[in-house]
Length: 160
Image (cartoon, rainbow, N blue to C red; front, side, top):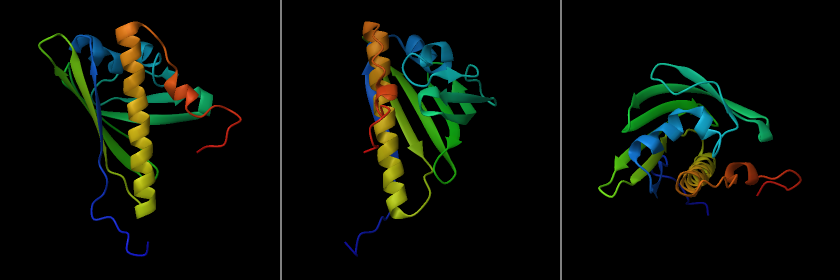
């Protein structure tokens, strides 16, 4: 394994088809009253370009300051937030489809650190955003709260 090395910093990309109109899907990420039903437990305000908000995951005793860089209604959101070794950028793209559904893609970039750290950050981010999208899909399509983020690391189990 001595010859393992990265030639590029990983970029995380994930996406999901949500069978709801783009305005409804977009609003679910903008409005913390909705977002708390599938992702974090508390948000200090709606996402607006140039604004900083705080997102809390109370079950983990964690929070993150989120700098909102871009909000293009029903099209795009860009934020910066803390990664392991500095800020990373997250971009959501919302693509409306003719059948009234929406494809949401999420890209997370800007990871820093050594190779092992980069790989861990990228895999953790991919897993996290995939859970977020699955939770959103269940909520908007079936009005079911799966609690995927909260159940990922239940108390009493060692982190895997």
